[in-house]
Image 1 (cartoon, rainbow, N blue to C red):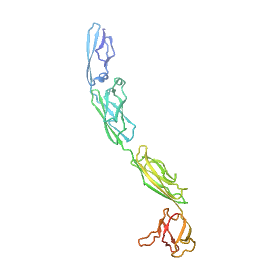
Image 2 (cartoon, rainbow, N blue to C red):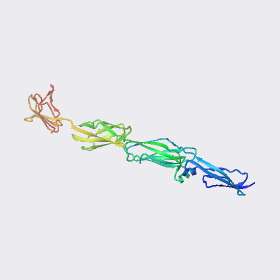
Image 3 (tube, rainbow, N blue to C red):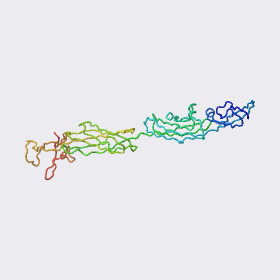
Length: 354
């Protein structure tokens, strides 16, 4: 039975469980390929274990470590992003990097433009302490749409193990145009006769280049106060919007307003719908007199008469006119007078509301 001492000559990646003992003994030897792989990568690494007995005799045991070129795999093998133009929030996906069945150090490089970047999420702590990543690890890949025009952008995530082959993960980033919202028709008109019921609602059809586009609706009136309203005031395309005129209390006259449909929540597009409202009074006849004497009485053929009342003529006075045959017109300014029971139309010389 002899006592022996075991030592390793300057190789931190080589360890053993027995440093001193008596024969016969079993020496357990292990290697950590991560240590040379961190700095050098694939290759052959020699070492030597020396066993010294009590009489200073040396037994040399050569050790050879071979690190094969690493080939890594990334899951998924490609990344696809899609963001709406005008967005400013970054979008991130992750890659799971592994392979070879043991710890492999690697580096990650993002290329294709400033819109693409990568960073580690998790990995081997020994590697992290040495400033590199090691398998198995998770890598985050981020795209930034800020300032990008609509279009398709191509980039690449390159994963390179120390002393191994590059694994490439293509990245496709599509910036889609913002949806556009439109509305039709672009003009509406209402007529209200005093007194009477409010006119029936009109409808607008709101559509978008992408179904589900958000929009908002506002109203404005140039004259007459708040007689114009819509329902609903917000929605998603395609939608129908009801436009309501509430002219109660308005004096006879012409009123104008507008409805504006605008894209919301990233959708673009603005449509302005011009709205007109005509308020008219019910025509009322209060007097039929001789045009010369202004005396009431029976009307004789050929007599000139004057008819008075409310809302029986146009706001702007209209005078006599002739047709193509040279006859005096029987309808001017929207006014027509007929005699019963023959329904004979009288030629008109003048018509006005005042």
